[in-house]
Image 1: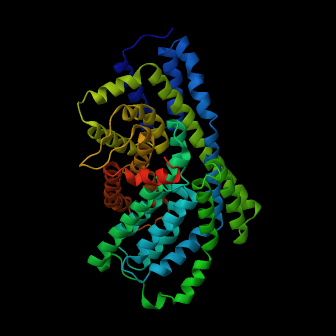
Image 2: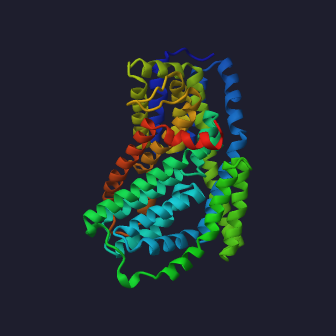
Image 3: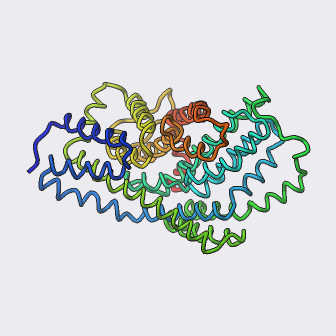
Length: 455
């Protein structure tokens, strides 16, 4: 029989202990898992101990999680196939004549890659190696060049196939297909906002992003030839997303088809060999193991907290602020943003969604400024996409945003960490605007799932 402790003190003890271990640099999976075991021993009882497996086992055996390694392997194989280089080459030759065209081409290429790979790290690192030197060589402003790469790379979180969407769907018990469809318009909205911002700034001040020199431009026939190299990967995108949207296959089955398609595309590019497959398999194993260990540890940690009454305590604390529904949502977004400065998205999702989503469901969302609200049945889908957009800011937010360090690892020596930090701020403001638009106009998220699934 464990000791009795007030839930307020337990909350303070659990989360301060977690913060202390993370500050020491320990991996999150082992921080949450070990703390869950310690707190179970100190403050648990037989009933809580018996209930824990019933919470954890259904999550760990959820069929939808099968899509995680499949999409990661698909991303790794496409990276090995050299698709990223060819895609960027085609797009920047098409857009190079425009002011800021190279930065806009970077965002377009990242958007297309997001629809193929759904993994931020692969896009950020590879595009950083290809696009950043090309922009700096042609006199682009360092902050604009880095910002375009940072923001474009994070689109892999949102645009399907997204690993984050898979994990959210499992935790929230939300239809993965609806979540993937609902994230398409917000993803393209953000991509369009990045391109519009880059173009506007470069036309106001052409020194920020000069157009491609005349001698480097190509004629229309060459542009069409370059497009030929992008046909196979674009068909793969259409195939994977199309069979999900048309209901021909589940997202997990589509992930399997996409994996086979990635192998086929690699073979077309003459890049398919045992070494490439082995490297892709090892990258998949490492990434999937990381996600699943965090999943296991955080589920135990949050499950114990909820079973001890933590969910009700947090709900009462948030609702006790007296804020209206949209004020509470703004508070949640602020909490997620702050957490994003220090934790990775998997931990944030597993720690907050089981606590925040029931609060969201308990409130009425009647709309703001006279715009339509959100029905109770649509709240998990709406919140899921808003959460994913917010997590894009987490990837860019100093001091520990993952994308900042991905880019620094491949940036030339003249690009300082301070420059990368400053580059992220202007695009984080655009992401915050994207979150606000999806909150005020929920149909940006809900319209397409309603159309595809006749909801």
